[in-house]
Length: 111
Image (cartoon, rainbow, N blue to C red; front, side, top):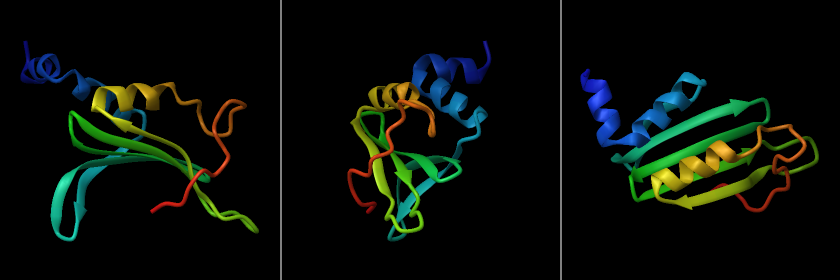
Protein backbone atom coordinates (compact mmCIF):
# COMPACT_ATOMS: atom_id res chain seq x y z
CA UNK A 1 0.00 0.00 0.00
CA UNK A 2 1.38 3.44 -0.93
CA UNK A 3 1.67 6.35 1.44
CA UNK A 4 -1.10 8.11 -0.53
CA UNK A 5 -3.48 5.18 -0.03
CA UNK A 6 -2.67 5.08 3.69
CA UNK A 7 -3.33 8.82 3.97
CA UNK A 8 -6.65 8.38 2.16
CA UNK A 9 -7.67 5.64 4.60
CA UNK A 10 -6.81 7.87 7.55
CA UNK A 11 -8.40 10.97 5.94
CA UNK A 12 -11.13 10.05 3.44
CA UNK A 13 -11.71 13.75 2.86
CA UNK A 14 -8.37 13.77 1.01
CA UNK A 15 -9.86 11.49 -1.63
CA UNK A 16 -12.67 13.97 -2.24
CA UNK A 17 -10.32 16.94 -2.33
CA UNK A 18 -8.09 15.07 -4.79
CA UNK A 19 -11.14 14.39 -6.97
CA UNK A 20 -12.05 18.08 -6.90
CA UNK A 21 -8.49 18.95 -7.90
CA UNK A 22 -8.65 16.49 -10.80
CA UNK A 23 -11.94 18.15 -11.87
CA UNK A 24 -10.15 21.48 -12.26
CA UNK A 25 -10.36 22.96 -8.78
CA UNK A 26 -7.40 25.06 -7.67
CA UNK A 27 -6.24 24.81 -4.03
CA UNK A 28 -3.94 27.16 -2.13
CA UNK A 29 -3.21 28.19 1.45
CA UNK A 30 -5.97 30.31 3.01
CA UNK A 31 -4.09 33.30 4.39
CA UNK A 32 -5.49 36.42 6.05
CA UNK A 33 -3.43 39.21 7.60
CA UNK A 34 -0.29 37.13 7.11
CA UNK A 35 -1.67 34.18 9.10
CA UNK A 36 -2.40 30.82 7.49
CA UNK A 37 -5.93 29.80 8.48
CA UNK A 38 -6.27 26.62 6.42
CA UNK A 39 -6.83 25.59 2.81
CA UNK A 40 -8.95 27.34 0.17
CA UNK A 41 -10.13 25.93 -3.13
CA UNK A 42 -12.05 27.36 -6.06
CA UNK A 43 -13.53 26.48 -9.43
CA UNK A 44 -14.88 29.02 -11.91
CA UNK A 45 -17.49 28.40 -14.59
CA UNK A 46 -17.99 31.58 -16.63
CA UNK A 47 -19.75 33.98 -14.21
CA UNK A 48 -20.00 31.61 -11.22
CA UNK A 49 -17.26 30.63 -8.77
CA UNK A 50 -17.53 27.79 -6.26
CA UNK A 51 -15.18 28.15 -3.30
CA UNK A 52 -14.39 26.11 -0.23
CA UNK A 53 -12.53 27.28 2.88
CA UNK A 54 -11.21 24.57 5.18
CA UNK A 55 -9.96 25.44 8.67
CA UNK A 56 -9.94 21.79 9.79
CA UNK A 57 -12.04 18.64 9.33
CA UNK A 58 -14.73 20.02 11.66
CA UNK A 59 -14.80 23.59 10.31
CA UNK A 60 -15.38 24.24 6.61
CA UNK A 61 -17.49 26.55 4.46
CA UNK A 62 -18.40 26.45 0.79
CA UNK A 63 -20.08 29.13 -1.29
CA UNK A 64 -21.17 29.68 -4.85
CA UNK A 65 -20.70 33.24 -6.02
CA UNK A 66 -22.21 35.02 -9.00
CA UNK A 67 -20.09 37.74 -10.59
CA UNK A 68 -21.53 41.22 -11.04
CA UNK A 69 -23.57 41.49 -14.24
CA UNK A 70 -24.39 44.58 -16.29
CA UNK A 71 -27.13 46.26 -14.28
CA UNK A 72 -27.09 43.66 -11.48
CA UNK A 73 -24.89 43.18 -8.45
CA UNK A 74 -23.54 39.66 -7.91
CA UNK A 75 -22.98 37.89 -4.62
CA UNK A 76 -23.57 34.63 -2.79
CA UNK A 77 -26.17 32.31 -4.37
CA UNK A 78 -25.44 29.26 -2.17
CA UNK A 79 -23.71 28.85 1.20
CA UNK A 80 -22.97 25.83 3.39
CA UNK A 81 -20.95 25.49 6.60
CA UNK A 82 -20.12 22.54 8.85
CA UNK A 83 -17.71 19.64 8.93
CA UNK A 84 -15.49 19.13 5.91
CA UNK A 85 -17.25 15.84 5.12
CA UNK A 86 -20.73 17.46 5.22
CA UNK A 87 -19.71 20.57 3.29
CA UNK A 88 -18.01 18.58 0.54
CA UNK A 89 -21.04 16.27 0.27
CA UNK A 90 -23.32 19.29 -0.14
CA UNK A 91 -20.92 20.85 -2.63
CA UNK A 92 -20.83 17.67 -4.71
CA UNK A 93 -24.66 17.52 -4.68
CA UNK A 94 -24.94 21.14 -5.85
CA UNK A 95 -26.25 21.33 -9.42
CA UNK A 96 -23.73 22.67 -11.93
CA UNK A 97 -23.95 26.39 -12.69
CA UNK A 98 -26.28 27.31 -15.56
CA UNK A 99 -28.37 24.15 -15.15
CA UNK A 100 -32.09 24.29 -14.47
CA UNK A 101 -31.89 23.46 -10.73
CA UNK A 102 -28.74 25.45 -9.95
CA UNK A 103 -29.13 28.33 -7.47
CA UNK A 104 -28.97 31.71 -9.22
CA UNK A 105 -30.74 34.10 -6.86
CA UNK A 106 -28.32 36.29 -4.88
CA UNK A 107 -28.89 35.71 -1.15
CA UNK A 108 -26.04 37.78 0.26
CA UNK A 109 -22.93 39.86 -0.34
CA UNK A 110 -19.41 38.44 -0.39
CA UNK A 111 -17.75 39.42 2.04
